[in-house]
Length: 341
Image 1 (spheres, rainbow, N blue to C red):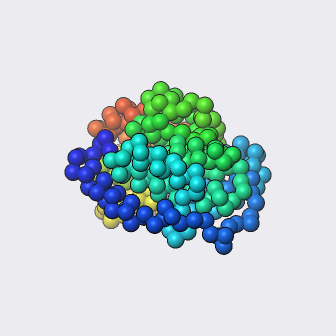
Image 2 (image 1 turned 135 degrees about the vertical axis):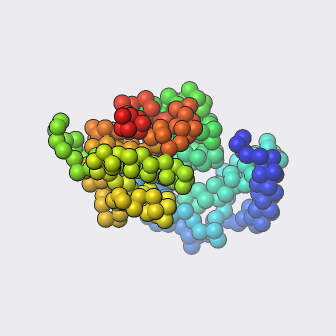
Image 3 (image 1 turned 90 degrees about the vertical axis):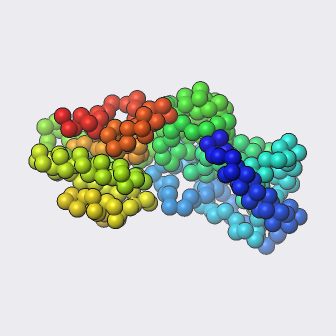
């Protein structure tokens, strides 16, 4: 809420009041025997929508928990508060009676995980894309009361954000000590939760070529969710490099493609089809890997590639990333403006 204007805070809390009143019957709902699961697993993992985990799941989890069962969060009609969750929710109401938005977020998360805690006889609940979950410390406490570990791992790059403050899981697997230092020193997170590991996706998505070998492309730009203004500024540089005889291509973000703008701006360049060209093939074919804040920069770096940070299309955002501990800023790299020279 720190970032938002007063009117937004008031609106969010008013909506939360209505949502809490509408959800009041759930407080009296109990576990139904017909929803109990007979599956036994040492750990369960909840698949996040549109994000696979096969190449980022820590091997430590796979080795420790033999059978990991993939499950889904319960449907709305099957959500309820288990005994421990109900107590925690009322404690939050008592301690923060006017924090309606916060209490609704906590209520929602406790309802989602109560069924998993009760219905699966497991030693660990594994989640990801969950680091922004403000209820995570409470969920970790609830799980640990039941003898269950609440575990998460990185799915992409992190920069400094207040919403990560005081974050706690039973275990949090991070890709680099850089993140551990940021979470502990800047965001006051519990130090003992962090474990550094290297996911499969960072174990070299491609092999670097011998020095002097020619690449199919001079550079590839990897887009995220850029504005039209930024897209046009990147296209401006690409046209200049093309006039010097450089062969270049771009790759849209697979989940946030603004194809109409990209096709207009880069009609004279190859626009990779993410469904046809793998990331490995894309990175391998280019000498320079360019982006402002894409995770691809980190993946390419671990593959021994030359990475280039875009300090041209949005200078304010570039400075902002420096302030917010963007990991690539502390790794060997070149700048986009250097390619023009």
